[in-house]
Image (tube, rainbow over all chains, first blue to last red; front, side, top):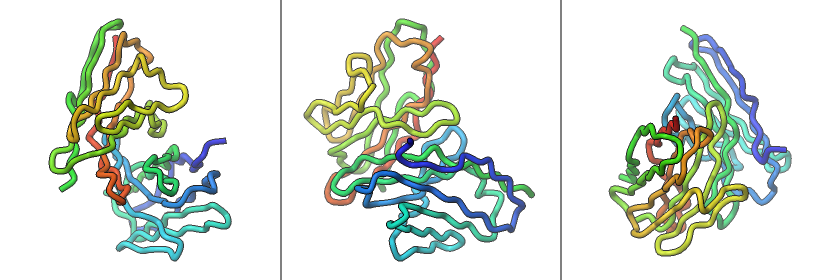
Length: 110
Length: 116
């Protein structure tokens, strides 16, 4: 079983719609959680960290459920520029090593 | 701030040759650098972690004699793919961390290696 699992998609969503991605992780030692976005043939870029209380950054909302070891990302009012692969990432306490999920590919359709 | 560069961005080499990829932190000192490999439509897989002035720590299944990592200064780490084969063709990405309590990693733009 992969340590971080995501639905690979692809998700094809009309512009303006709301889309949600989920991610589960198996390592209970994971303490920090992130969503990264990666454009085709580019490096991953940090989208947002994910906190237990949930956090919002503009159109993006991230949630963490430690009991279920589950992370989500919600994108509201999707834009064409949101088309990318979204990577769920975990990090253990006191360890800088990041563990990446396989990513969920999103395409926003005009 | 927190800019990481990689060179070259793209390289094509013949089977059996060696290729060196450089990763530089341009505006901060990176005590730790990480090397990842990404195959098409796959996720990033950590290959090794390198700390300045010490030997790299390789992940399970990564051959240390094939993927030589040198982290000689606080701003430069190099990955050398020795005796490259077509199956080594991949996207190699480095990241750097200051390691001072903030575990954020800053990623380089990646190097696309094609071995013919």
